[in-house]
Image (cartoon, rainbow over all chains, first blue to last red; front, side, top):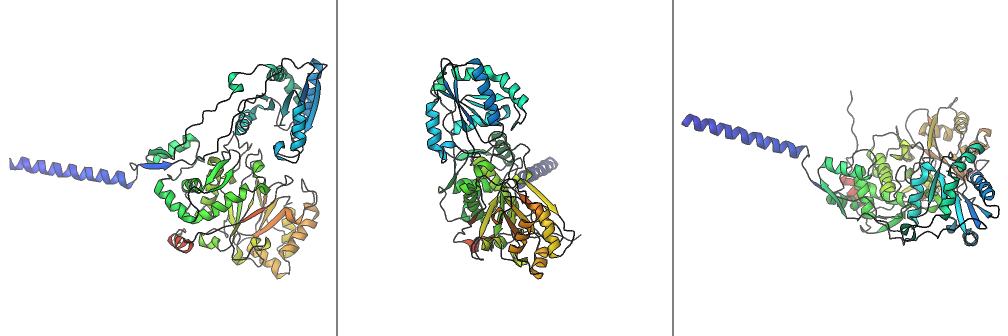
Amino acid sequence: MLRFISILAIAVFISMVTFSCSQKTSVKDGSEYQYEVLSPWAEVDAIPLRGISPRLDSLSGKKIGLFANFKRAARPIQAEVERRLKERFPDIETSLFDSRLPNVTETETVNKEKFTAWAKEMDAVIAAVGD
Amino acid sequence: MLLANRGFVNDAHSAASGKGMPGVRVLGTSIACESTVAEDIKSGIDKVFEEIIAGLTRPLTEEEKSPRVDFETQTRIAFKGTYEEVNQFFYRKGWGDGLPIVPPSEAAIEEMMKGTDLPADHVVVKIIPRMGKATIEKIAINAVMAGALPTHMPVLIAAVEAVSDPKTRFDTFEVSTGSWAPLLVINGPIRKDIHINCSSGALSPGDLANAAIGRALGLIIKNIGGARKGIEDMGTLGNPAKYALVVGENEEESPWEPLHVECGYEKDSNTLTVLFPNRYTQTIPAQTNAEGIATALAGMRPGALSCMLVIPDHAKIFSREGWSKKKVKEFIMQSSESRDSRRFGQLQNEDFIIVVSGGPGVWMGLLQSAGGFGNYFVTKKIKLPSNWEALTAKYSTMVPTYVRY
């Protein structure tokens, strides 16, 4: 009986040591440590959303604005669009807005008034960015 | 409606949403970016011509008339988990840079914010293109993620101010196909306080300040500015310098006045100067006298805007032979090899800077950006917190000590 109790005591001791060691290992290597972390993604002010302009019934007889940004492909792209539009709709009128300032929003430049006035005259606008 | 190369459709939608018009109709074309081939343009338009007409005539959907964007609800606490789980979560959210991050816990952020006297909710700037609010806390969170120290916070705050200055034309460089990376040139005593490497391998990995400040700025641009690779940041090839490109001027080894003094600051001021290069070249001079070194510098053909890195030994040779920095710049400007700067023609004094940096050796470097966008070098003062002495003392031992073998 005494022998059994001794063996049991040794077994319990070994299991306690083993458990203790395994606990220390998991804490030591940090694998079980729980981090509560904050978001790095910034907040923004809400922007009022706007729908796009109503579409046209037909392009026939309409004034179509062709906006080309500063990139070199933009103007030839618009020239081809213009050629095709006029081929399909002989009575169509087109007007090119040639933006020469690199990577700008025209409404935030010295051209704001010129651009706004141009856009208002158009029934629809096709923009090409050259990329 | 908008015509764009089909690889730019997501970018265009993101830009439209950012302006409050997510419904803008965008049509992707097969026309190569910046194409100069008339046949390709003709063929590309031919393929989408019916869609162009439809884009202008097809009636609007309800969503296009009254757009709604379901933004994910922002919570201050993003996640709770183990180190590995946090890293996996952040990576999947697209908040990382490919390398493991340091979990931005409340305690770590609190410690990071000791690097400034500004309150956590102070908005330094709003960063384009998303116009995310760069609060002190958000800057600190990204700094923790990058492994930065609280002593790096003053530099990061100044860096955020500098890159956002309209004079840099960050709006172009941040998201351009050219893959431009922010270069920070640090001047003043802070270099020593926070152990910015200005000597051997100044641009190589291995120094916490250089690496973590650059990395943190990259994360700030992504997570606060919202410039994500392939969506808003359309860098075609990309640029490893976007991980980190931070260098200090080796003022102690330079016989010349440092960059910030040239810019009108006191020598004991702390500043950073920002530029967005997309290429870095190095060369050696055929002759190691002043004229030989100047000829090699000119031979690298600096254009607007660029930063030339001159090593201390070469700067000393220049000085010994009576060449000031101004004279070296004049030599470079007059050199025939430097005359065809792409956008400005004759290279001008304000088109390039000379920074003395690096260690022993013979190599010199050129970090080349672009000019002609109404862009300029921007230098900002780095403002230190009131506890600076104690803070730098706390982290003073954060330097690598290499064993001999």
